Image (tube, rainbow, N blue to C red; front, side, top):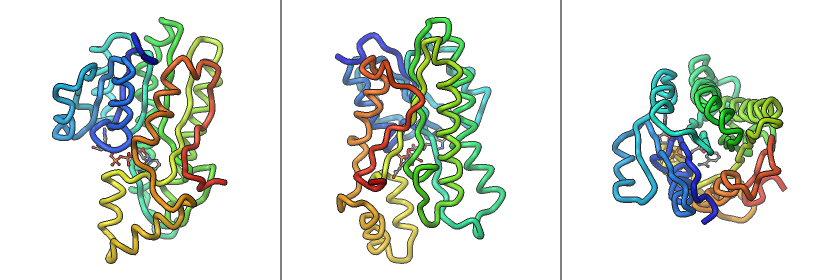
Length: 244
Ligand code: NAD
């Protein structure tokens, strides 16, 4: 078991990539605290070995502190929470930008601030931040707010990696291409012609298909494990060829 004896906290674990990553880490022997703002979604963890489900809204700094205070020192933090806004810079509103920065970036700062003291005391820790190929890596049409905030995640990741590289803490980012998750389905269904919208998402993926969340989770497991012990400050791209 590649994560035997490790403890992990995952945000936005109720569905999609967060959910698949919790199951993959638990299957490798990690003790995982799976958190989400939506308690209903967490019911799916009932009876899953090695997983404890907890409600956590990552927009609530005090709640993050309270949850982390209840847990043993953590080996792994997977910051998966994030939101996608559609639109160009002409369409973007101040509220959208502020909300996306709060959820996609500031929440990662808050959770890292909460877990770092324990990781530093133990002299080890792996922090994994959810970014996207839509970031400083690649501009995608109609994703101004999203791409801006996910680029910030890469900056945040490298900054944390640089500050703690000599103290046993690693910090990396994961950059998926298009993944067929519930929120992607919602965004597709919000279009006047959902079938055409799905085709357009598939068309931008050179492999001719979307990823499944289970195809992103192995990278999270790798970064959580000691197999990646020499990797820090990096963006791990799993994108079906979108950035070739
Ligand atoms: P999703 O968007 O379908 O689910 C998101 C989860 O986040 C939900 O369970 C929701 O309840 C939870 N959540 C929302 N607000 C929260 C909050 N304030 N506190 C805690 N949890 C909250 O899942 P997904 O599509 O796998 O996306 C997960 C992450 O992966 C996001 O950061 C997203 O930007 C990123 N990502 C997704 C794709 C994709 O194509 N799906 C591609 C690249 C990156």
